[in-house]
Amino acid sequence: MAERTALWYRHNALQGERPPIVMELDTFEDDMLPAPRCASPAAQRIERNLLRHIVNYEEIGDDKVVPATYTVYWDISIDEFGIDIPTEHGTDASGRTVGYHWQHPIKNLSEDFRRLKPATFSVDRDGTYAWKAFVEDVLGDILPVEIKNASLRWHATPCAKIVRLMGLESMMIAMIDEPDAMHALFGYLRDNILAFVRWQEREGLLTLNNGNDYAGAGSYGFTHELPTENYYRTGRVTPADQWLNMNSQETVSISPRMYGRYVLPYYCEIAEPFGLTYYGCCEPVHDIWEKYVSKLPHLRKVSISAWCNEEYMGEALRGSGVIYSRKPSPNFVGVGATLDEEGFAAHIRKTLTAARGCSAEIIFRDIYTLNGNRSKPGRAVQITRDMIDEVW
Image 1 (cartoon, rainbow, N blue to C red):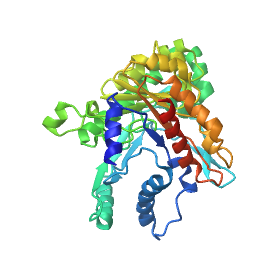
Image 2 (image 1 turned 90 degrees about the vertical axis):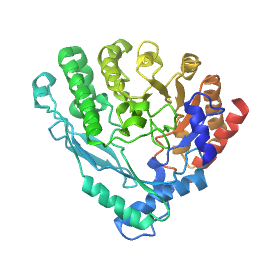
Image 3 (image 1 turned 120 degrees about the vertical axis):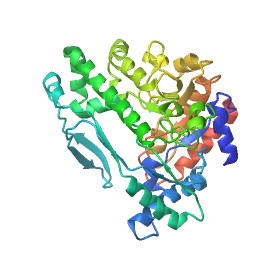
Image 4 (image 1 turned 30 degrees about the horizontal axis):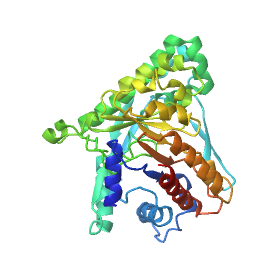
């Protein structure tokens, strides 16, 4: 774990010798984790959190660092809009709840915008401390228990919030038909997000994410560039001491110019107070990179998704100080009972060739089933290591 930790610190400082590999387990962990041996829901929750690390280490073998602590999280609640958004859920053939549909409250943006209220926030300190004490009673003589904050991990996503409020098609039409109302909506969401951050800062709820912390879409935050000197003087965490994770997957179908008009200005204002920025998830960024995404404040990593022009982004990021955060296609591991090893190796070789000369990382995400073959993730990691040895 010390070797992996050092690898991540060098990598995030743009001095890494090879791309770190991450295989996100969360979406397919039901195919990997053994049945719980504990009886109570509370004990099963602890057991499952421990098993994730054990199974990942023993069977997948990527570069995630097994933590030396057990983390509990602040129980933070937010009423984002002051209106309800009912959600209808659907299940797949295995009975898992993976599909959903929002009943969008905004039907006409110009008329319904007034229904939106400033966001309100609360924290259950007593409940958080009680859960921490419970876990310490169980594990405290084995693992230190710490409180962290995951409430901002996927929160800086205004476009995702717009889709919840009015739907994707309505959002794109409103960008043409109701430009003033759309700018008002983006401004409202920007203000809500920054108000949430400032409230947490005042309440002393922000925690550092510059170590073995989820800092982007599958990536980790190990860096000595954070926190700031102000943190060492005051002991208080501010946004300037943190990574920010943001994306705009929902605007993949609008033009680059429209992205620059509606999305970028508000995203820049959200990112400005933070120390380092990770941008992107599944959306391709090559069409909006040069004029727009590259202008985001404090940008250190950008997601190169399965739909992105790898070669273009390799050229663009070489020597840029921005890390090439590659998301290979999940289909190799997630579709079918067997891994097409030859096709997968070619897929990874293509990435490594395109990213040569960049600081790069390889992050497998959005794999939802292993189709009964639990060996595929570990085998994919090993093949990726082989390709790094061969190509990098």
